[in-house]
Amino acid sequence: MMVSYRLYWTLWMLLCFEQYFSQDLQIPEPPNKEEGDSVVFTPDNPPPSTSILITQWFFTTATIIIVVSGVPTVNPAYEGRISFDSNTFALTLQNLRHSDSGIYRLSVTTSAGETRTGETSLQVEKLSVNLTGPEEPLIEGESSANINSEGNGNIISVQWMKNNSPLSPSSSIIFSPDNRSVSISPVQRSDSGEYQCKYTNPVNSETATYSLIINYGPEDVSIKGLGEVNSGAPVSLSCSANSVPSASFRWTFNGTNTGVTTDTYTIDKTDFTDSGDYDCTAWNSVTNRSASQRHVLLVKAGGGGGGLSTGAIVGIVIGVLVAVAAICGLIVYLIKTKKMPKLTLPQNGRSSGAAAQRRQEPDLNYADISHFQKGSGERVILGNRGEPNTEYAEVKRSGTKSTAPPPPYGSQVSNPPLRRDLQLLLSPQEDGGHV
Image (cartoon, rainbow, N blue to C red):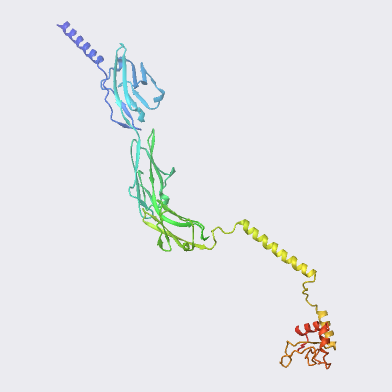
């Protein structure tokens, strides 16, 4: 009876160990992890550690760690990231990465040469970040903007930037307590740009971007073009404005709509009716604002509108200079040939001496002045060569009236000094002489 009992017990023990060693290792599948997290793989039915000769953990086909007779060897790629429990065969993997997602397998070999295996899987969610912002158009000085970030993973820091430069808080820029959102109120045109939000975990970082557009204007409307042209010349006026989005344009001429809605107003051939005020009105369809600028155009007579060329102007100047030189040369020639009297100013000494000499001369010359008046105002009656009643004018010199009788008519006509006396009669007298 005792033998039968011992035999039964032995058979039962052998059966239990046979089932135990023939059974696969059961390793529960952990929940999804995020980058930066840690995970522990532990088999539910580990064999006695005293009977294990070799233990190995694999990720897909790559060895993570191998333990032979209690001596571990770790793959350099996992140095500092794993730990192993030789009693429970548990493997701990830290600072998970998205690339750690996959199949993990455990293999143990007993001292009797038997091998048992088990496997599980791991899913590591990649670090992600997403930005959302206002959907309605933003108008400078009127609107507010909120930019929010959303993401997953073991996030240890959140950093905001604008156009790749750190974004700092100010009176109009406010960050949320968890630093995952930013508010701007009111928005200005300088707030336009690309905003970045960077999430960082122990192993990785991700950045999301959001473009903020601030609408403003139109402002600084200007018109470029000629303000004065000759009739017949073409004219092109160009209108511009500072505006976001780009402004649309409308042209009026002297207050009348021209129908032109582009930034350029063109006249192929001008005439006098094109003179006037040209107004360009810029309009922003988002801000619903407008601004205008006026340009005054004057069309002058000019025949073709081009004016004189540089060559024509030079030719005219040269022609004028040649004509002036010719006139000066002619004057010099006439003076030298005595065909034109020299105009000389009398010197004081000579003038006074000549006047004194004339005052001392007792001579009195006569001239036939039948076409002049007498001193009493009566007209001189023209005589003839045969009559003795020909009348003469007497020139008074030095306040003394000569008593000499007039010469005969014929002798005065033929006498050459008559010319000089006539000149004395017609020219102003220095001493007050009169007829």
